Length: 364
Image 1: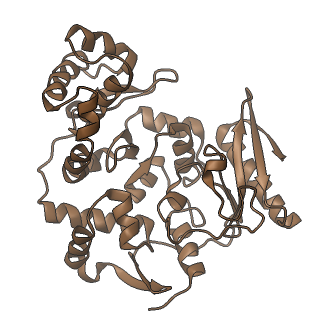
Image 2: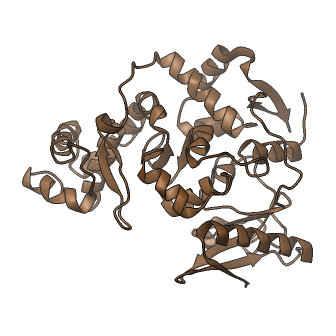
Image 3: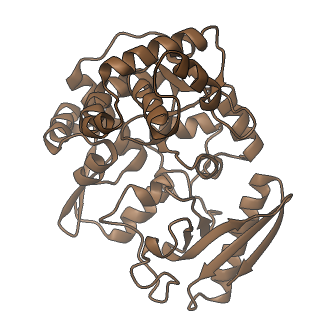
């Protein structure tokens, strides 16, 4: 059926629980979205918190430290949050392609599969018994084994072993991330047939991110278009196909996606949030007087995040330094109405409440 762009954007917001009822736990959000990009971990935790009923920064961090959801390199060559029960089958499906695509990069750092395997032996020795160690604490053990022990090479040795399913995130140690052995925190499971895994990932993506296109999915997961079409064929009528501006989109009609009457008008979306990052071709319209310009060029300030109000990309926000206070710098389109500015300030209040801090928002 033919539909409007506005309907697509509203449904995505509701599907992702930004304008519909929040989910009970942060791990429920991770399961809904399947993988949540998280190289900026504090911002990614806000992505979970804003979709969770009564979510707080302390609560999301506690759930992470308890292992209710994990952080690792998965799906693409960057960090994502993922549920423990989804780790193995997604790695099995997507890691070979990620590793293959990075082979030249690894070679320039002196890394290959033999080095990765030797590193795996070190990880299994020093992390045994759920011993959570930071990268800095692991480095001397790598050095003693004659393996890369600093800089990018050490980081990518970790990355390779994450993609191989040897190590995964552990609880935070202060401000530092730790690592644990996958085999000690994730139960074993029978590997899926590849076609079954493709169909499952296709379904999960459209259930948590729909309405979305095939190109949205191939960008998100690096599956080929042929693989996505195979998944769609296997799924049959479990997904609904709609069309906007001549582009076919898919969604799971069984996923709750009703905008709540009390839904907020404005959101301070974290950098790399799934509702903006996922859809480069059909995203939120940009205010003509956006502070980044009419195209909202992210390179003007790549660390500023999106202010969304009434479905319009209307500015940017950043959290400025400040102990015990949520100092939120807002750069808004000049054409916003006073009511829209108040809605943005209410969004800043929600972020402050999530952080458990006093809110100080200022517009520049």
